[in-house]
Length: 349
Image 1 (cartoon, rainbow, N blue to C red):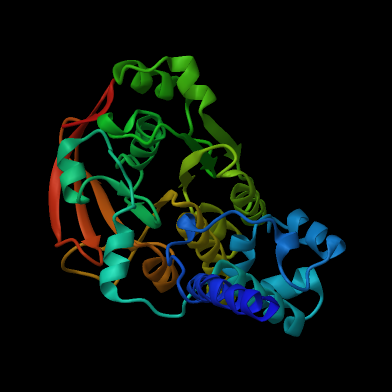
Image 2: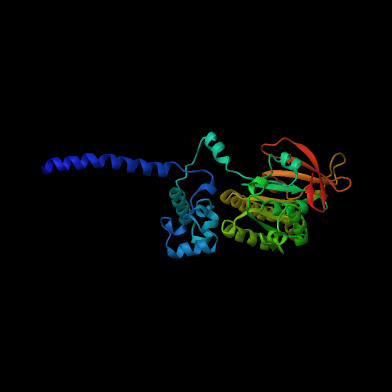
């Protein structure tokens, strides 16, 4: 009787064991590739991270395992003390999330369907951008003064608050102003026209004035700590290059300027990707005195900004408040241009 009972126990428990092994194997080998789909797990759950280290990580903006898994070794080493330890913590975080090094392009296609778009409020401009401003990407508006860059940023800060069926994401915006051009009165005008309560629209925009490039970097660092908590789906920087041009004049400072600008763009790309956020930046233009034919203007920021921005749109002035928008750099859109108008109600067709 005893022998028979033991045999039955072994036979019954074997399938359970196999199921458990399969589940564990699936957890380790199969993981989502899009960071915003990953679960939010506290950093203290990472193997090798104690209470003190976890506290240090949180103070520097690494509140979840997801933040650590996509951090660079160098920046994490500044928090934990050494590059070896930082590398081990990053590997442990990636293992905890079950990340795979490669997936098929079909899987990526399916997962990219979760990307959202914010309407610009201009039908022709939405068509130019393939449906609006894309999340998990940096969209750059380039143009000389008065081209309508800030007007579009104001409008997008309102549009993101609308429900999805009206082109928004029912979310908040973060507006970092480097030139002192943000106007709450303009937000109220646009919000009223779009059917929103003007004062509520202002409440849903988190505003900060950046006074220098270091302050701008600190604000972006702070942004990554609060985007999910505050339901922010749009981050605007108007303009991204202003302080860098003022603080690093001349060729002798160019390398340092571009390195710092590259750091900033890298931080913005990570925020966009990790939190499924749309990042919009405006950029100034510089003149090329040696150009005798064609457009003598080109975007400021050089190759660093050109490589960092996902979509680049050139804005220029036309007659009677008409503006021309041309998409001139995109991984998926053809080059073409459209026109829109700036009125008291904002940007319209």
